[in-house]
Length: 481
Ligand code: ADP
Image (cartoon, rainbow, N blue to C red; front, side, top):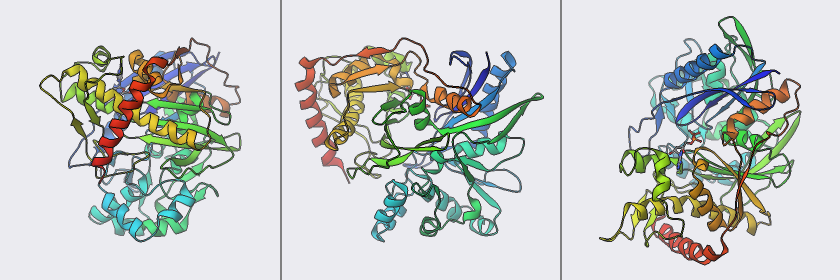
């Protein structure tokens, strides 16, 4: 049996996993790293931490098994790095997808009337979340950067690009279609960088990486004399789509990691839903482009981290489960999960988080339950929009770190009144990257044999959650900017 390597570079950690051709996990190494929050709404990472943690985990697994056929990379999307083509060094920290510093710039572009053109070409909304305004911010705010860029001396990349550049012996400046489709610079219908968009965002085309399909040839990692071809690259959410075998029209998954991202495969049709959902490239594999609809929720697992690290309610994310009520009752406490504004369907950069309804009687359980409800309610906002647009939802596949929490999965099922299916291995993102590399190497990536767990909705709780959602909606509305 052959072995494949998946590198999963996430917002909170980097992982390397070796799978066999039956998609069984053989070796796994994970290293966390810290983000920094230098200003209100700013979120940065140190690119050296990304490379260091990836290299450490690579070393760990390759020490145990160096016989690896090919590698697939999956990564946090949109996070923006600009580096010097001469030295290979970044000229500024990575600006993370959650960062809101360019919100005034986005408002200005909307005022100038660019929103509809940008949407029609990219499938995205004009929001600081995506890479384009982050790139321009770096060019405008780092000394000499704009000049250097004009001379063709700077490179831009999302995390996949930067990893390929640093890890491939050829120092390739490449990206894949899924990551490109999150920059606001990529025309998803023509599947290429778009000069009109580059002009609007004031970004020189010389900075951009070459775009390949997910199953392209991205270069070779040379590790202790071993050559490992990079044969798959896919953004993390699209990776989970592939990892969960969502290959048919209407298949959908929701990944609960730092943020939550619900995605529906719409095959060859880029479907536009006007109520704040995105149209994006699902994948391009074997020459076939598939599109997806996406509902992006910014704050999800990071809420649990905040309850752990700042509120000190528990020491481990796992312990949050003990405090989560499964009866739909948060004692009227409402939680507004807007640490970095709100994503779908609100798209409000300036709103910040809040707690409402606190009394002398409020307990840690009430606050934790309200925090979890804010995640399930946001998911319900998205599933309601999908159903209103005639997208049928029979079941929802879930994955990501939070899906380990069974009470959460049950509360999600009761709130949505849908069957929730959780695979045995919730690392669907890495599995997706491995599958792409396998397909690119000529293997058939069959389904992982494992025990899926189904969570069935309790109809008796339907009304309680409906009322809770309505109250939560009103609370959010009064806070929107
Ligand atoms: P990412 O890929 O975005 O780095 P992961 O999919 O690794 O994220 O998930 C990590 C997130 O899941 C963390 O934010 C953590 O707080 C949350 N998490 C992990 N386990 C649990 C749990 N049992 N209950 C609730 N949240 C959890």
